[in-house]
Image (cartoon, rainbow, N blue to C red):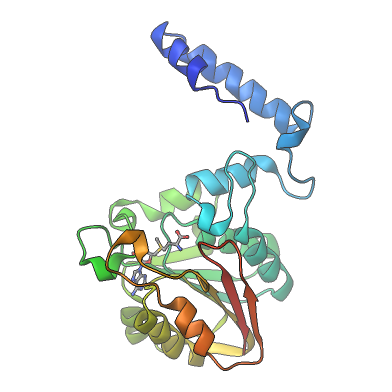
Length: 256
Ligand SMILES: C[S@@+](CC[C@H](N)C(=O)[O-])C[C@H]1O[C@@H](n2cnc3c(N)ncnc32)[C@H](O)[C@@H]1O
Protein backbone atom coordinates (compact mmCIF):
# COMPACT_ATOMS: atom_id res chain seq x y z
CA UNK A 1 0.00 0.00 0.00
CA UNK A 2 1.41 3.42 -0.95
CA UNK A 3 2.07 5.90 1.80
CA UNK A 4 1.81 9.52 0.71
CA UNK A 5 2.68 11.05 4.10
CA UNK A 6 6.12 12.04 2.82
CA UNK A 7 4.69 13.92 -0.17
CA UNK A 8 2.05 15.58 2.01
CA UNK A 9 4.72 16.80 4.43
CA UNK A 10 6.81 18.16 1.55
CA UNK A 11 3.75 19.92 0.10
CA UNK A 12 3.07 21.50 3.50
CA UNK A 13 6.69 22.58 3.79
CA UNK A 14 6.63 24.33 0.41
CA UNK A 15 3.06 25.71 0.80
CA UNK A 16 1.79 23.45 -1.97
CA UNK A 17 -0.97 21.78 -0.03
CA UNK A 18 -3.70 22.96 -2.42
CA UNK A 19 -1.82 21.48 -5.36
CA UNK A 20 -1.29 18.27 -3.37
CA UNK A 21 -5.04 18.02 -2.58
CA UNK A 22 -5.91 18.76 -6.21
CA UNK A 23 -3.64 15.95 -7.47
CA UNK A 24 -4.91 13.62 -4.74
CA UNK A 25 -8.52 14.23 -5.82
CA UNK A 26 -7.61 13.49 -9.45
CA UNK A 27 -5.95 10.25 -8.37
CA UNK A 28 -8.99 9.23 -6.29
CA UNK A 29 -11.27 9.97 -9.25
CA UNK A 30 -9.11 7.89 -11.59
CA UNK A 31 -9.33 4.98 -9.14
CA UNK A 32 -13.09 5.40 -8.82
CA UNK A 33 -13.41 5.42 -12.60
CA UNK A 34 -11.34 2.23 -12.69
CA UNK A 35 -8.66 3.80 -14.86
CA UNK A 36 -5.83 2.97 -12.45
CA UNK A 37 -4.84 0.86 -9.41
CA UNK A 38 -7.23 -2.02 -10.06
CA UNK A 39 -6.25 -3.63 -6.76
CA UNK A 40 -7.89 -0.75 -4.88
CA UNK A 41 -11.23 -1.53 -6.48
CA UNK A 42 -12.78 -4.11 -4.22
CA UNK A 43 -16.04 -4.52 -6.03
CA UNK A 44 -17.99 -3.43 -9.06
CA UNK A 45 -21.18 -3.78 -7.02
CA UNK A 46 -20.54 -0.98 -4.54
CA UNK A 47 -18.99 2.40 -5.16
CA UNK A 48 -15.56 2.67 -3.57
CA UNK A 49 -16.14 6.38 -2.95
CA UNK A 50 -19.29 5.74 -0.89
CA UNK A 51 -17.61 2.85 0.93
CA UNK A 52 -14.60 4.99 1.85
CA UNK A 53 -16.84 7.81 3.02
CA UNK A 54 -18.90 5.46 5.17
CA UNK A 55 -15.85 3.91 6.79
CA UNK A 56 -13.81 7.08 7.32
CA UNK A 57 -16.49 9.64 8.18
CA UNK A 58 -18.50 7.30 10.42
CA UNK A 59 -15.38 5.57 11.82
CA UNK A 60 -15.87 1.96 10.84
CA UNK A 61 -12.99 -0.01 12.35
CA UNK A 62 -11.22 -3.37 12.44
CA UNK A 63 -13.78 -4.85 14.83
CA UNK A 64 -16.26 -4.34 11.98
CA UNK A 65 -13.67 -5.65 9.48
CA UNK A 66 -13.93 -2.28 7.75
CA UNK A 67 -11.11 -0.79 5.68
CA UNK A 68 -11.29 2.86 4.71
CA UNK A 69 -8.52 2.78 2.10
CA UNK A 70 -10.34 0.15 0.11
CA UNK A 71 -13.80 1.40 1.02
CA UNK A 72 -14.56 -2.10 2.30
CA UNK A 73 -17.54 -2.20 4.66
CA UNK A 74 -16.81 -5.48 6.46
CA UNK A 75 -19.77 -6.37 8.71
CA UNK A 76 -21.46 -3.29 7.28
CA UNK A 77 -22.00 -5.40 4.14
CA UNK A 78 -23.90 -7.99 6.18
CA UNK A 79 -26.21 -5.37 7.72
CA UNK A 80 -26.69 -3.68 4.36
CA UNK A 81 -27.52 -6.96 2.61
CA UNK A 82 -29.91 -8.14 5.34
CA UNK A 83 -31.81 -4.85 5.37
CA UNK A 84 -31.99 -4.65 1.57
CA UNK A 85 -33.48 -8.16 1.57
CA UNK A 86 -35.80 -8.00 4.59
CA UNK A 87 -36.97 -4.45 3.85
CA UNK A 88 -37.72 -3.54 7.46
CA UNK A 89 -40.10 -0.73 8.30
CA UNK A 90 -38.26 0.12 11.50
CA UNK A 91 -34.64 -0.50 12.56
CA UNK A 92 -33.14 0.01 16.02
CA UNK A 93 -29.37 0.53 16.59
CA UNK A 94 -28.03 0.52 20.16
CA UNK A 95 -24.56 2.10 20.56
CA UNK A 96 -22.02 3.31 18.00
CA UNK A 97 -18.69 5.06 18.20
CA UNK A 98 -19.04 7.30 15.13
CA UNK A 99 -22.26 6.10 13.51
CA UNK A 100 -20.88 3.50 11.10
CA UNK A 101 -23.53 0.77 11.48
CA UNK A 102 -26.43 3.25 11.97
CA UNK A 103 -25.30 4.97 8.74
CA UNK A 104 -25.10 1.65 6.84
CA UNK A 105 -28.61 0.73 8.09
CA UNK A 106 -29.96 4.17 7.11
CA UNK A 107 -28.34 3.86 3.67
CA UNK A 108 -29.98 0.45 3.16
CA UNK A 109 -33.39 1.93 4.13
CA UNK A 110 -32.78 4.85 1.78
CA UNK A 111 -31.88 2.46 -1.06
CA UNK A 112 -35.02 0.45 -0.23
CA UNK A 113 -37.12 3.64 -0.28
CA UNK A 114 -38.56 2.18 2.89
CA UNK A 115 -37.75 2.05 6.59
CA UNK A 116 -36.38 4.27 9.32
CA UNK A 117 -33.57 3.92 11.89
CA UNK A 118 -33.83 4.80 15.59
CA UNK A 119 -30.30 5.10 16.94
CA UNK A 120 -29.64 5.22 20.71
CA UNK A 121 -26.37 6.33 22.29
CA UNK A 122 -26.00 8.35 25.51
CA UNK A 123 -22.74 9.88 24.25
CA UNK A 124 -20.69 8.33 26.99
CA UNK A 125 -17.00 9.21 27.04
CA UNK A 126 -13.95 8.42 29.13
CA UNK A 127 -15.27 10.71 31.88
CA UNK A 128 -17.86 8.01 32.68
CA UNK A 129 -17.06 5.29 35.21
CA UNK A 130 -14.94 2.72 33.42
CA UNK A 131 -17.68 0.10 33.39
CA UNK A 132 -20.06 2.37 31.48
CA UNK A 133 -18.69 3.91 28.32
CA UNK A 134 -17.39 0.93 26.31
CA UNK A 135 -15.25 2.93 23.91
CA UNK A 136 -17.53 5.93 23.51
CA UNK A 137 -15.73 9.22 23.00
CA UNK A 138 -18.45 11.66 24.06
CA UNK A 139 -18.97 12.15 20.30
CA UNK A 140 -22.78 12.22 20.34
CA UNK A 141 -22.96 14.88 23.05
CA UNK A 142 -20.85 17.25 21.00
CA UNK A 143 -21.96 16.52 17.46
CA UNK A 144 -24.64 18.13 15.37
CA UNK A 145 -26.01 14.69 14.56
CA UNK A 146 -28.16 15.68 11.56
CA UNK A 147 -25.15 17.45 10.03
CA UNK A 148 -22.93 14.43 10.69
CA UNK A 149 -25.31 12.09 8.83
CA UNK A 150 -25.96 14.66 6.08
CA UNK A 151 -22.52 13.76 4.68
CA UNK A 152 -24.30 10.98 2.78
CA UNK A 153 -27.74 12.59 2.84
CA UNK A 154 -28.91 10.15 5.50
CA UNK A 155 -30.27 12.69 7.97
CA UNK A 156 -33.89 12.04 6.93
CA UNK A 157 -33.53 8.30 7.42
CA UNK A 158 -32.61 8.19 11.09
CA UNK A 159 -33.09 9.85 14.47
CA UNK A 160 -30.55 9.82 17.27
CA UNK A 161 -31.66 9.52 20.91
CA UNK A 162 -29.14 10.81 23.44
CA UNK A 163 -29.94 8.33 26.21
CA UNK A 164 -29.27 4.78 27.34
CA UNK A 165 -31.21 1.86 25.87
CA UNK A 166 -33.06 1.43 29.21
CA UNK A 167 -34.14 5.09 29.17
CA UNK A 168 -35.26 4.73 25.55
CA UNK A 169 -37.38 1.70 26.42
CA UNK A 170 -38.97 3.64 29.28
CA UNK A 171 -39.78 6.59 26.99
CA UNK A 172 -40.91 4.57 23.97
CA UNK A 173 -42.12 1.21 25.29
CA UNK A 174 -44.39 0.32 22.36
CA UNK A 175 -42.11 0.79 19.30
CA UNK A 176 -41.94 -2.29 17.10
CA UNK A 177 -38.87 -3.25 15.10
CA UNK A 178 -38.03 -5.71 12.32
CA UNK A 179 -34.24 -5.30 12.78
CA UNK A 180 -32.37 -4.59 16.02
CA UNK A 181 -28.60 -4.10 16.30
CA UNK A 182 -27.04 -4.35 19.78
CA UNK A 183 -23.59 -2.75 20.31
CA UNK A 184 -23.95 -0.65 23.48
CA UNK A 185 -23.14 -1.89 26.99
CA UNK A 186 -20.88 -4.91 26.39
CA UNK A 187 -21.01 -6.33 29.92
CA UNK A 188 -22.87 -9.60 30.49
CA UNK A 189 -25.57 -7.77 32.48
CA UNK A 190 -25.74 -4.93 29.92
CA UNK A 191 -26.26 -7.09 26.85
CA UNK A 192 -28.70 -9.35 28.67
CA UNK A 193 -30.68 -6.28 29.69
CA UNK A 194 -30.81 -5.07 26.06
CA UNK A 195 -31.99 -8.50 24.95
CA UNK A 196 -34.67 -8.67 27.64
CA UNK A 197 -35.78 -5.08 27.05
CA UNK A 198 -36.09 -5.24 23.27
CA UNK A 199 -36.87 -8.87 22.37
CA UNK A 200 -40.58 -8.17 23.03
CA UNK A 201 -40.35 -5.20 20.63
CA UNK A 202 -39.03 -7.38 17.79
CA UNK A 203 -41.73 -8.51 15.38
CA UNK A 204 -42.17 -12.22 14.64
CA UNK A 205 -39.56 -13.20 12.01
CA UNK A 206 -37.48 -10.08 12.76
CA UNK A 207 -33.71 -10.15 13.38
CA UNK A 208 -31.69 -9.19 16.45
CA UNK A 209 -27.98 -8.82 15.67
CA UNK A 210 -25.20 -8.63 18.27
CA UNK A 211 -21.69 -7.30 17.81
CA UNK A 212 -18.72 -8.74 19.75
CA UNK A 213 -20.17 -12.22 20.39
CA UNK A 214 -16.78 -13.94 20.58
CA UNK A 215 -14.43 -11.38 22.10
CA UNK A 216 -13.22 -12.32 25.60
CA UNK A 217 -11.13 -10.62 28.26
CA UNK A 218 -11.07 -7.01 29.35
CA UNK A 219 -11.94 -3.92 27.34
CA UNK A 220 -8.79 -1.86 26.63
CA UNK A 221 -6.90 -3.90 29.25
CA UNK A 222 -9.02 -2.18 31.93
CA UNK A 223 -11.42 -3.57 34.50
CA UNK A 224 -14.41 -3.96 32.20
CA UNK A 225 -15.03 -7.54 31.27
CA UNK A 226 -16.59 -8.34 27.90
CA UNK A 227 -19.72 -10.36 28.56
CA UNK A 228 -21.49 -10.61 25.20
CA UNK A 229 -19.84 -13.99 24.45
CA UNK A 230 -21.13 -15.44 27.75
CA UNK A 231 -24.66 -14.22 27.08
CA UNK A 232 -24.44 -15.58 23.53
CA UNK A 233 -23.14 -19.00 24.66
CA UNK A 234 -25.91 -19.30 27.24
CA UNK A 235 -28.66 -18.29 24.85
CA UNK A 236 -30.63 -21.37 24.05
CA UNK A 237 -32.06 -20.61 20.63
CA UNK A 238 -31.87 -22.89 17.62
CA UNK A 239 -32.12 -19.95 15.20
CA UNK A 240 -28.78 -18.60 16.38
CA UNK A 241 -26.15 -17.86 13.68
CA UNK A 242 -22.58 -17.03 14.73
CA UNK A 243 -19.90 -15.41 12.58
CA UNK A 244 -16.79 -16.20 14.69
CA UNK A 245 -14.57 -13.62 13.03
CA UNK A 246 -12.62 -11.46 13.36
CA UNK A 247 -11.21 -12.74 16.65
CA UNK A 248 -11.51 -9.31 18.28
CA UNK A 249 -15.29 -9.14 17.77
CA UNK A 250 -17.64 -11.57 15.98
CA UNK A 251 -21.24 -11.13 14.90
CA UNK A 252 -24.31 -13.01 16.12
CA UNK A 253 -27.69 -13.12 14.40
CA UNK A 254 -30.95 -14.26 15.95
CA UNK A 255 -34.32 -14.65 14.28
CA UNK A 256 -37.52 -14.44 16.28
C1 LIG B 1 -18.18 2.52 20.81
S1 LIG B 1 -19.45 1.35 20.77
C2 LIG B 1 -18.54 -0.14 21.02
C3 LIG B 1 -17.53 -0.36 20.02
C4 LIG B 1 -18.08 -0.99 18.83
N1 LIG B 1 -18.07 -2.43 18.97
C5 LIG B 1 -17.41 -0.55 17.60
O1 LIG B 1 -17.35 -1.31 16.67
O2 LIG B 1 -16.92 0.56 17.52
C6 LIG B 1 -20.21 1.46 22.32
C7 LIG B 1 -21.14 2.65 22.40
O3 LIG B 1 -22.20 2.23 23.23
C8 LIG B 1 -22.64 3.34 23.97
N2 LIG B 1 -23.32 2.81 25.15
C9 LIG B 1 -22.78 2.39 26.32
N3 LIG B 1 -23.75 2.01 27.16
C10 LIG B 1 -24.92 2.17 26.50
C11 LIG B 1 -26.28 1.94 26.83
N4 LIG B 1 -26.63 1.47 28.03
N5 LIG B 1 -27.23 2.21 25.91
C12 LIG B 1 -26.88 2.68 24.67
N6 LIG B 1 -25.61 2.91 24.29
C13 LIG B 1 -24.65 2.66 25.20
C14 LIG B 1 -21.38 4.15 24.26
O4 LIG B 1 -21.70 5.52 24.45
C15 LIG B 1 -20.53 3.90 23.03
O5 LIG B 1 -20.63 4.95 22.10
